[in-house]
Image (tube, rainbow, N blue to C red; front, side, top):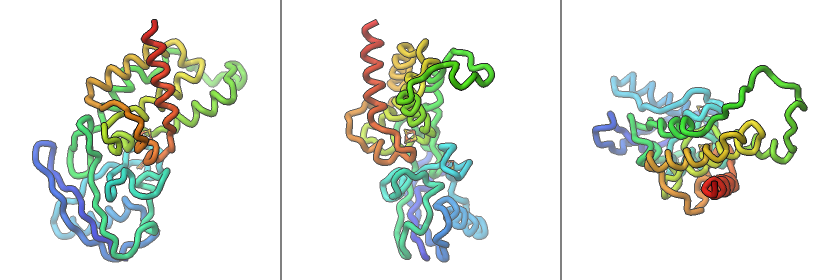
Length: 246
Ligand code: SF4
Ligand code: FES
């Protein structure tokens, strides 16, 4: 099939970017979106042009490196799917796709579709950790965790830190990402010692990074490739209120 792409090209953080039109003929429907970009890049390199820069690593939906807006939707039109796992069979011959980087003050564009997500690293450094020594693997039942808590903690731990939630939120809020981290640590016994400190530190760091506030719009949940739930934000807010009481 033939796909027409309009891709954001920006040489570096200092220069202004613009959309550039490309045609990719002979796209195989079994290609992933990133493989389709690989094909485009090979043709650009063959013509002596600069290839499109985009982030990727695992290409299996687990590392959180990939991501771009496709026709205004973070990671494209397929729910619960990262860009690297989005296959071209979900598009039609002749489709015209607008591909842009994440747009948020906290995620400045580095080049083309690559943005700097160091702000997420700094949120984690502020509070997304535990001090309990994990040591070697403990006996299965040595630390008792209610099944419901274990399930919810595991669901929240599925967050891969891709940043789609921020990119899709009209406030560029990092609340779903923070809610996921605060839930997965705060629901387990090992996460209790820092529980109050964690939420205060992460919320304070989010302000420093210029992430916006959550106004319960829900776009983040709708595009999250790991289907992290809004209830993680409610849990974060509950922890924040309790931590403010002392
Ligand atoms: S909450 Fe979802 S969209 Fe946000 S960083 Fe985690 S995996 Fe990505
Ligand atoms: S490249 Fe790892 S999640 Fe897409």
